[in-house]
Image (cartoon, helix red, strand yellow):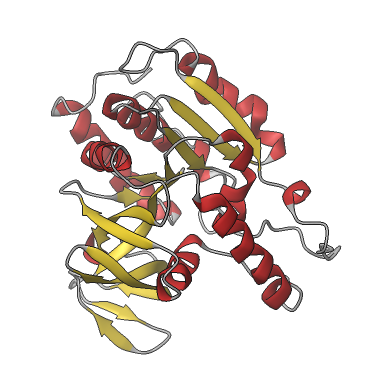
Length: 304
């Protein structure tokens, strides 16, 4: 069965102080997206869908699109490359975007922007995270067997492997039962301390380092889009008119759909180390980790 990798790359990267999605940090200036694409193609995915800002088309083509069009998937078919814009043209007509609103409406809105491009099972990821090759293999295998409606999948990671010493992070803190996601709580202001202690600063509570969290590594069937559209429309009616910075987020949507018995979500685990760049100071650690992966033979000398 065909499957697509959907990369959410329209984020502003404000805390990082630049466009972290296109910062070359691998041994040959590879960007983190290139590792995701490499691992996904090795796992069997055949199509790459980039969700980007409208002014990123030329840049993304130079970074990834041009060489991807010359590659083939595992089944020998050409890799399909699609760009979709995350902008306000996809907002339903009943909602008038306030003139003061400049920021997109979050990850649910991002995925909805790709609805016309995705007609097969899909894996949805952040552009600026490294998830590891095993996660893509596990997700591709799972997508082949998910029923057409009512189920999804998520790769979970341990909180201790996803926090930063250089500032707070937001994570979807998960509750699991027999390998199934039962709840996900979007938790901001999680701080990692040098002694390994993790704390939710908002609620002044300690968090277990072994807590499973969502890092936006989702697997969906195409049937998710009508459900997602209804959820997003309700978000616009309830929330967005009162808060110019409100975002509609995939983990929050997942929690809502599970609670209303509209979706069940399998949780896949990965032995790979997750890493990403939230703050500028994280860059050196990620660069070192990528170099070690190349040195170990996990990746060829050059990905392209």
